[in-house]
Image 1 (tube, rainbow, N blue to C red):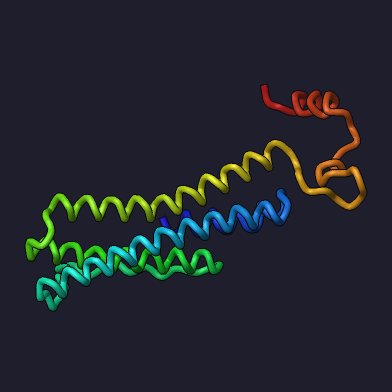
Image 2 (spheres, rainbow, N blue to C red; image 1 turned 135 degrees about the vertical axis):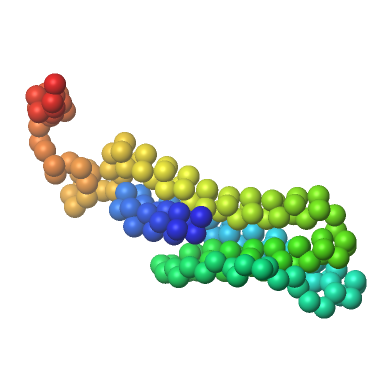
Length: 178
C-alpha cells in the first residue's frame, strides 16, 4: 500500500495543482494528513496499551519471528509520504507485541486477530482515501480544465482549437478506425 499511497499523493500534488485551485488541493492534502495522523495516534495508543500489559504481566521480551522481516528500500517524496511510512513502521512494531501477548495468554487469539485486522484496515484506509482523492481529480481532469489560463474568461483548454465541438467530433470520427 505504500507505493500506491506515494503515487496517489504525488498525483494529488502535481496534477491536482494543475487542474484545481491551490486551496482545493491543500484542503484535500490536509484531510489526508489528518487521516494519517489519526491512525498514527490510534496505533500509538495500541502500542502504549500493549506495553502496559507487558509491564503488568512481567513480560520482558518480545516474540521474534523465525523468518526475518521483509525489507524494501523506498523513496520518500513528501512529508505526507514520510508520515505514512512512519505509520507503517509503527504498525510493524505493534504486531509482534500483540503476538507476544497472545503467546503469554494475556489476550485471546480472537482479541489478537481483531486488533491486528482493525489496525491493518485503518492503515490501508489511508491509502484508499488517497486513491479516491486521486481518482476524483482524474475525473475532474477528464471533465475539463478548471484553472483559468492567461487571458480573462479563457480556460486552459481554450487555446487548443478554435473549432466548434461538432467539427472536432467529426474529425475524430473520421480518423477513428472502423
